[in-house]
Amino acid sequence: MTEAVAVPMNNTSPKRDNIILDVKGLQKFFPIQKGLLRKTVGYVKAVDDVSFYVREGETLGLVGESGCGKTTAGRTIIRLYEPTGGDVFFSSRVLSETGAPQMVNLAKMDHRQMKFIRQEISMIFQDPVNSLNPRMTVGDIIAEPMVIHGKYGVDSEQIIISLLERVGLRPDHLRRYPHEFSGGQRQRIGIARALSMNPRLVICDEPVSALDVSIQAQTLNLLEDLQGDFNLAYIFVAHDLSVVQHISDRVAVMYVGKVAEIADSDELYNNPLHPYTEALMSAVPKPDPKYKSERIVMQGEVADPSNPPSGCYFHPRCQYAIDVCKQKTPEFRELKPDHFVACHRAEELTLRGV
Image (cartoon, rainbow, N blue to C red):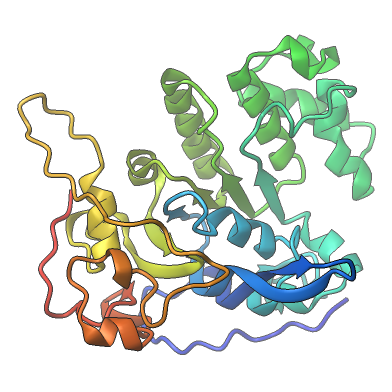
């Protein structure tokens, strides 16, 4: 067993209760190696000083352009990637001697302890084809976490059948192989596998991006139903802002490895405080054929995480940038209750939401 680690609560907001995950200053740098001796000449800062928290039973959406580090952040939390720095506090029951939830630091755990933790944290992967072993039956795929954790017993097959039915599949699918299913059905198999150990937190890595639009809606509704039934907390990684708005309680916007803004979903979409968030919101389609789009077209390219600009990473593309934006890194601070932003001019700008 590991000792429980108390979470340092720097924020006294009354909304910060029932926290199941508290990420503080998370970093993941990938080395750049060159030459015959593979000498490290630099680092790709895929995740750089990311902080957020997730409460029990809520969904935190992670959004941003491709390559902003949102998937890497999710994989680093669950230790599929080893963190370069920072802390990841998780409210664990399996490592508690009393059975009551205790905060432990995932970033400091060894592999044996993380094996226990993965009973409580699972992941739904983006690609429903490559995330399923084509040589295993559906029953074996869903049972694999039970076998790994020594939980497979005489009643496990009935549990697997119940999970299949719960995600909209039939008991006779148990003996079939992944290639016999459609993309949406494969993703349902992945969801059933993620739930096989009755986790408390599920990291959803763009679970609907590879699906047709009609199947996306069905999958999102299924995830919401399962969340209510099992009291799950989700980290929902996506780049489709309309999908994130539909499913998320709170939303974190990432840009080049950093969190630019976090707020409740309605607050973020209606009253953004960061220019990058405003630009993303302007691209959300409006369900009104008479509406004239006023999309903000950002100039230039996304900053290089191996050689980011000085000051605010977004300043080369920001229409509101001033000298301080180019020279000083903005502080990530709370400007409204439970609304955090990293922008020097957040108090003085009036930005458009959805």
